Image (cartoon, rainbow, N blue to C red; front, side, top):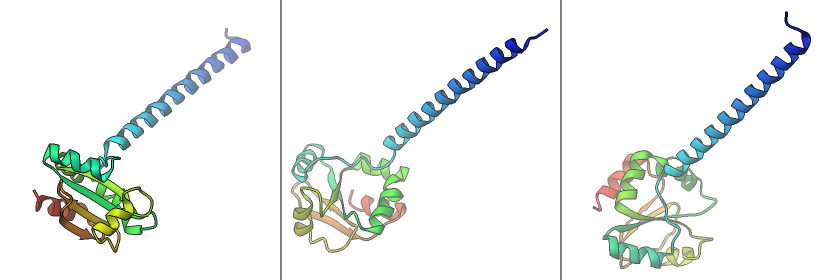
Amino acid sequence: MTTKKQIKLYMKKTIGIIAVLSLLMAFSWKNNFVKKQESTGIAFRHISLAEAKKQAVKSGQLIFIDAYTSWCGPCKRMAATTFKDEKVATYFNENFISLKIDVEKDVDGPEIEKMYKVQAYPTLLFINSKGKLEKNVVGFQDPDKLIAIAKSLN
């Protein structure tokens, strides 16, 4: 027969195993979620405009700039939806050197705002390796519209 002591020991072991399995599942979920987040969306580079121009010369690609502000609602919406879209990310990551520039806070922000006459947000700029503006698009763009715009340049 089973004694109370054996039952308590069995219960403690069972609870311990459940706790360990729960922790393992939680960490596994978190790691998969973080990896998935990092691998989705346009891969915006954290480089200066000058460096982007150098890379554009080497690669032959255009530079895509998302000129935004921290207080802009449509900018936040594009960052959360359009720029995270798998089709958009694939096309832009293969065909452009992409920069995300807060025109009020980033080092190149005020220069880009003045040089390309940015007056509303978001403003999406497509420029060549010499800094010449190829296309300027103002306002929120859904994934299909943004891909169509990008394809019209390549």
